[in-house]
Structures are given as C-alpha cells and as structure tokens.
Image (cartoon, rainbow, N blue to C red; front, side, top):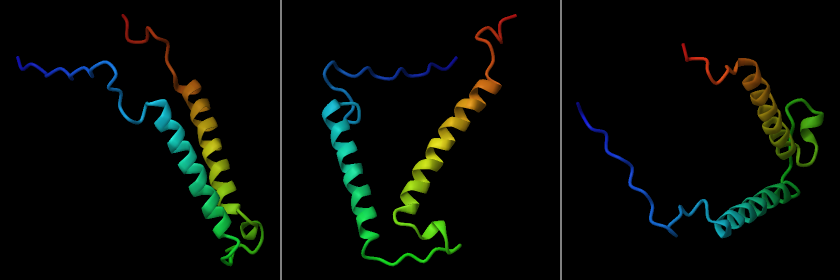
Length: 92
C-alpha cells in the first residue's frame, strides 16, 4: 500500500503572506485604488453603450459588476440551502 506524504507543517510565525493582517490591508487598499482609477478614467474616455440607455451611465460597468457579484453570492447561498444534505447522510 502506497503511503501518501504528509503536508509539512508551517513553522510558528511563518504564516502565508496572504493571511497576514498587514498584507490584507495592503491588498484591500490597492484594490480600491485600482477601482477608483479605472472609474476616474471613464471621465476622460467616451462610453458608447450597446443599448443606448443605462449602459451609458457613468461607472455603469463597475456598478453592474458589483451587483452581479452580490447576486451570485445570494444565489449560491440559496442553492446551497436547497441541495444540502444532513450531516449523517452517508451513515447507515
């Protein structure tokens, strides 16, 4: 029977760089700055919407993307509640 190698444990104090609080703050700050820059650049570029209506509004792609992401989270939560099984589903 083949043995599966165990994953080496991280030494105390050597957390992954993505879970350190100071780096999480930097990632959030950088993401907000990038979003603000892309929305601000829309002031200097013309937008031609496909439907000639709502999609021509200022910052529509950012708002639409955010709302679509929120909707996906809610749908996933709802779907999870619909298809979830009891904890003892596989117990005989």
